[in-house]
Amino acid sequence: MKQVKLWSRNCQKLTDTLDKIASSLEGQAKRINEAKQQVSAVDDQVASLKLRLAQVENRQVTMADQIDNAENCSRRDNIQILNLKEGMKGEHLLEFFESWLPTKLGLSTAKGCKDWTALIGPPGRGMTRPVILKLHNSQNKPWIMAAAGKAKNLEHEGSCSFIHQDLSNAVRLKHHSYNDVVRK
Figure 1 (cartoon, rainbow, N blue to C red):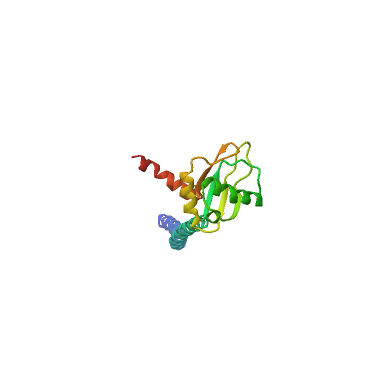
Figure 2: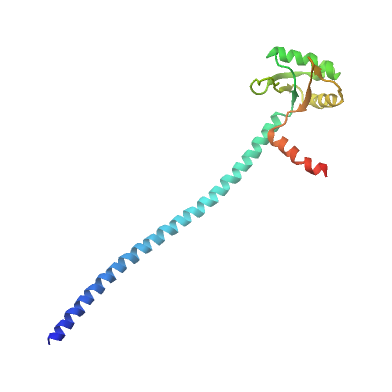
């Protein structure tokens, strides 16, 4: 009998321990299921955010292209003159180009009509700044560029000047990327 009671007590202890373990496992299973649901919800949110991010990135690329296009359109009537000595500002600069460009390029004054001029960048140490000329009429640009290509000497106060199209940095990089192709 003693052995049966002892055995019964041990079985009861074992049963109590197993019940505690079972209730603990049920709690853990409940927490694991809750965690799975939260992970699933986060995965769904991440998937929708990835889709939204892809849409935003596509829109950003489109907008960047539109900004580049708008910048290039705004530069369409501009020419850039390099290596002119500094010293003139504002209206004097515009008056200078009204007389200097037609004289050097052999153009009539009507073809050289300009809206405004601007020096680009801060004054440098011993370096000249590019000058941007906004032409009044976009038809004047091809005439000026063709005459600049034919002109042998665009000199002013001892320095040789150059006339180029006013291109954005993106377009300049694209032009430079074709140099290797052209060389082949």
